[in-house]
Length: 189
Image: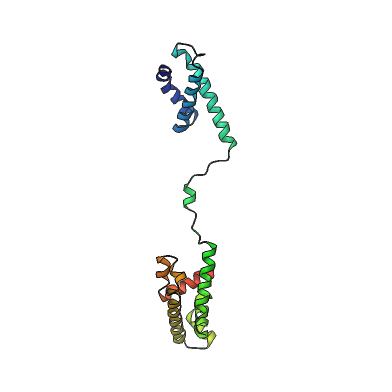
């Protein structure tokens, strides 16, 4: 068997590489199966190792055809690369908890502050539009917005449920503008 392998392995592998379109792993697997079958039928093969080549090529060709048919019968394999492009989406339970925390924080605001936050960050109105709608000066809208976001920051920054979501989220919600962005993100979700 060793002599048979030494004489035919290189040419058999080259032939199999052509049949597998350069797939070295598939060619090596087919060569291994071909040699295994030769070993099982070693007693029936001719004693001269050079005269066994046609038999080896026939076995290898049939194995390659069987492998090709088996591959065609299976659905195509999916590579890992497209999976890396799938965006990570927050878990639904986490989204529900985040919304509840924000609702509780919004409920802790005064009615005037809550109105300004809803108009500016959820409905995405400009300061001028909010001032006209509420009939108050623009400076008052800015002041209420600033104070409301500070109150939200305090409400969210001390909430253990929000702190446990990870350092990035807790830090992001400590700033007043970040709290407004969090409200806008929650509205979009």
